[in-house]
Length: 102
Image (cartoon, rainbow, N blue to C red; front, side, top):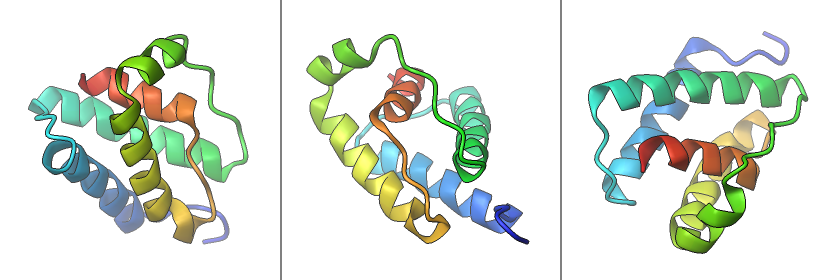
């Protein structure tokens, strides 16, 4: 597979991020939130692998003021996961993720 991400990689990325959010950030997720987050993460990784930019998060500035620790920790964790895919997530995308779980 050229630049595509295989199903096992998507599964690992999504489950790892959800576990990090619940265990490290102490933000429990209801099943429907986890399902929506999984879809969002798959679309995000696919978009980044295709070289497309993330849209701007309209709540980014507010969230950066209210949740700086969560944004920083989640961004560092996700980028460590995505390093093998040679992609990086930006603050806008991290804010979208947190917006869905807060």
